[in-house]
Amino acid sequence: MAGVDGPVTLQGIAEQLGLHVSTVSRVLNGRAGVQDRAASGETARRIRELARELGYQPNPHATSLRTRRSNLVGVLFPRLSEIVVATIYEGVEQEAAEHGLSVFVTNTRDDPDVRRERIAMVLGRRVDGLIIGDAHLDGAALTDPALHGVPFVLVNRRTDGDHPAVTCDDVLGGRLAAEHLLGLGHRRVGVIAGEPFASTGTDRVAGFLERYRKAGLPVPGHRVRHCRFDTVGGRQAAMDLLSLPDRPTALFAVNDLAAIGAMGAARDLDLRPGSDFALVGFNDTPLAAELPIPLTSVHSPMAELGRAAVRQLLHRIAGEPATSQRLRPGLVTRASSGAPIGPALI
Image 1: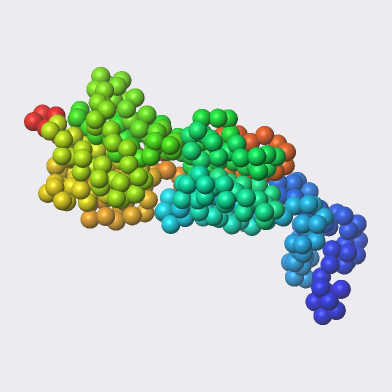
Image 2: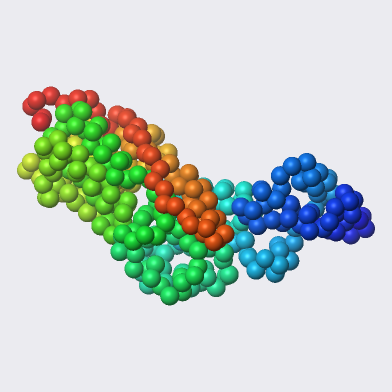
């Protein structure tokens, strides 16, 4: 049966073990999420052990025809070049592989027209479901008729609708940044707020501003600047904020790239983060700890966001309800936020 005489087959494994071929098939080729239940016990162990010994490889084309599934998941992100997005995608890829799924990603550049084209392209590849990481708060793209009946979950960003989403608890993250700066004595703060269409920016800003309001220190609108989620946007927003007559003693940037841009603005203005003003970012990307002035940042469990999104998508593929999840962030303090400030700076 094996190797020398031809390919290893389910029928051959079943004959060697004295089992029905359907039992062997359920164990080795079970649907993701169902496979584990079918593969419990001593019988499953014997089947897997013999399959490994003989070098059995499932035929993905036959499996697809039999189950009407492709075992393929499409992923949409704004830009895979961004470290946060790339880390989330690594989590997606790792979790998908553990469930026998293949994934592929496409970039939408956060452009609605490009997104529609990419959705059509992805669905044309007969994916079993989608993980969407470029949702806008209004959820407009998710009303695309092409998505009707297609299982999908959101990751990293949520919408104002009821679509299942796996995100960091961004409101809590903004609150943690505010509590840190309040604890250091900063009463006059500025916010680099990111793009208003993305929940990552709006929720982080909301948490931050809410905490300052509760402290009796509402942040005026002119000290909240929206910008692109990159170093260029962060630099321009910080330049504006740090040039104000009532210059903030601290800045909160809704992602690390914008915070790095703020460091560039500070350099141009002959200011030093951690000394002349405090600076806090968000996501705690690996670069944050390696900067010349290490960046205080709110840690987001980026890879786990991707893994959790796959698990929720599997529920939807199986016809079960998916649940929105908000994973807990944590603050990592470094030199950029400096020491408690004296009365003269407040």
